[in-house]
Image 1 (cartoon, rainbow, N blue to C red):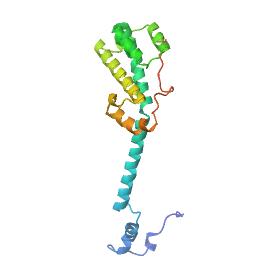
Image 2: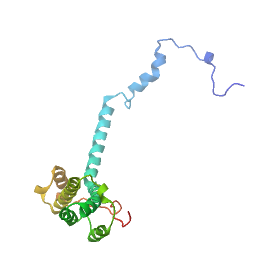
Image 3: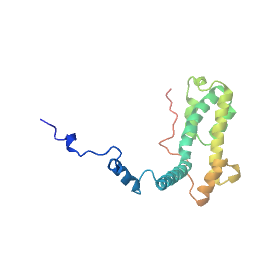
Image 4: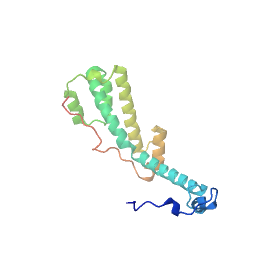
Length: 184
């Protein structure tokens, strides 16, 4: 029994080898304005891509602080533990004074015991990490207070785009922030 979906090739009329009938569908497709090969559509899609990229850049600039804050807070916990146990207590105090760690978190971290020397290879690396977190928090505070001259170039751009118009970016989200636990 023959398949219902097969056609007998001999039943079709023969088409000349270089006949217009062979490429008629392609010609109709190229005459259509929504053809892929028209330059106008390409320009329109490029404009759509650029506008989407600009919108995502604005959203990224506006919502970058909660993610950077969570990153720096995680780094601050490790750095504080290392500096408190093996490094400079003064630098650990400066890190805690930035406000990235609450008083209860500092109290919990002071009571924590463990092998924190594995966090950094040298005390200088820990101090560099502390300086990075302190700089981030100072930049965040300068952005909040509108101290334009103390901002880095990205901070200045964010100030011009958002803070100047009364739209301060969010500082942190509790769902992203790590909290120091007393367990190792």
